[in-house]
Image (cartoon, rainbow, N blue to C red; front, side, top):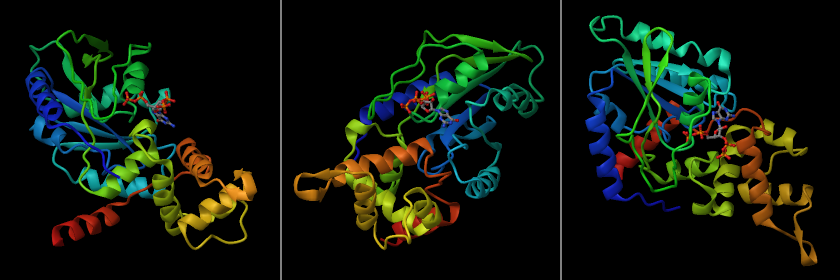
Length: 291
Ligand code: G4P
């Protein structure tokens, strides 16, 4: 699955965020807990430099809690990073973030009035939801069409939170890092890449193969199967059969079955799923280096 990002947009984003960074004391990077590697952008580390960073593994309500713990451990090894699993829809837990920002900026110059915080991340990970939750009101969402990079504008305002935290009201939007083909599939499966840019059958097949391997029990339970099919295409056929996705002549409509599977993965109907583990990613990177 080929996804294109335009170098012009990337360079512009890097330049503008770099300029904005001089007014930022701490970065909150929002990632998708189901795909922390594929939804992370390495440019954040390059741009934030010495500034502390809170990495939020958001949508943790949809991710496998065992795998999320492994990722938290993985990210906390990074210099200046505090990692947290969160669902930013959960207001009671999200409201502790200003306190964490304060803890990470203890030696702030007392002459400065506020600790300045900026939220960054790829589209669809929950940046706007987080800003709205922290602000306690709904602010306009910035556009995030695939392959289009929008960044913090000069018209940016700050939201004053408790304890002297000033939060930029516009997030820094970065493109996803698509270093390998699996990452583009995982971004599409979880919905970070918009449906207009994807071929449902292609990504459903990728998802079905993975689910058979990693979450066969959940597949059996959800689709009331006696046993897990051996291949992704067999699973899609079973889903099609069970959900009445039939075309003339009783042929199974794989396209419709694919849409059902992807929709049910994204909504959490199959259960809490993670699509990458630190170990799996380490292997993939090793393999890429060998090639
Ligand atoms: P963005 O600014 O980073 O682009 O993301 P945004 O806040 O717009 O969130 C994208 C979608 O993800 C929204 O769904 C939002 O409700 C959902 N979302 C955000 N945080 C969480 C979370 O912690 N858990 C779950 N389950 N969902 C979360 P949406 O408005 O329905 O958009 P879409 O999914 O139809 O694109």
